[in-house]
Length: 484
Image (cartoon, rainbow, N blue to C red; front, side):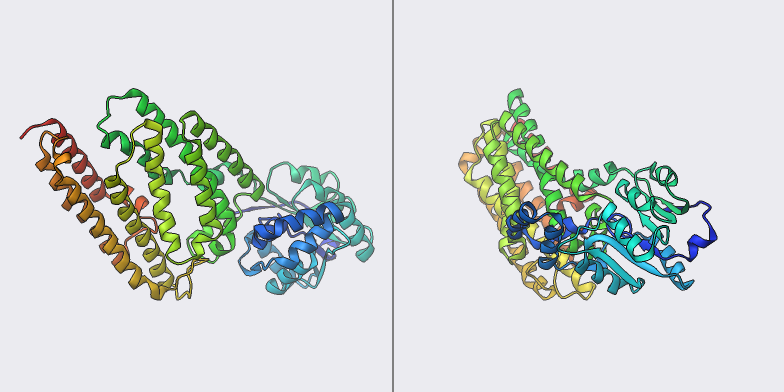
């Protein structure tokens, strides 16, 4: 929670109009960036042309005309908002003075019902820095207003203001503002983006990338050092690429996330992570993933994974059934990447088993989300193409897929070719009911409301899942090494 630091200012200043900046001050975000994201990739070429041909003021007008921002869910600065409410109750005249376009600014003002006046950018004027200072002086006179801001660009406004309200997010801004204007109030909210960035990378999701090591086990190549090295590089490539896509996905989904009781705490949605930092990190991670993938000989596989993930984030996640089939494919391509990197091709048996298994897990994930939406009386799941009423049929699809995966495993185990590769093939039969038990338990946990919306993350924290996994690995080892 922000710590308010009160610094002495004249009593006359408190009686003057309080003009409040929007981007970075009243909200912990940038509405121009949010508008460009909300407008979708199809509007980006037009936005770029407008900026080059007509400048930033025209760009803001272009973006505002094509973006439907949900201002009621923006990450408002709670400490500053509380201060403004107290000032409003005391009868103070409040002005929203922002470089954001007037259409967006007026929407925010209508939602908050705090401001008596809005002064904002138009298609002809970008109201930032000196331009904002001139506009406020023309309206209220030199030293005739108090200004609330958050950046060095606001120093030009504070020089001509009677006093300053400082939202200091980087540290040191309050001191600089004090050198040009008396400080009415300072909200010290200094924080680093690193913790938020690390959370946005979702390192717990890297567990899925361990699938690249599976071909080493299925090929009985545990003693091949080079295979382990190539698989490790592939693991790093997929981790970096996956995190890059998570950042893009969270940026695209920011408005939907803010409506969600848990996802609203994600770094972009909460305002903890600036879009510039997050999207810049995404580009670097994508380059790292492709570079390491090239070293492992799987650059094309990693690029295909990135393209599939972006297609999923951009459109496929909105298409019922297509989304879960794509999720299953994104799991399977990790197996394929591990096979290419290690030189151990995947058998059709493994592809069939993993396809049904991952499709079942993808269905399980959707059912969990839909049950949560139903509990919250929501009519749809974010940008998904489902409603809570679809949960029952998806559960049927998912359970059928889970049982099909176990059927494929049973057929594989009974093959003579499989038996010839093991010293005690009879032990392999025990893996069939174990894997089916594990999947049935996940479905039962979902029905009882225990499931996290990601089954892999849930399994990683579940002692029964760890026990089943360890038992299956032990059985595989014994079947391969010990004759009964």
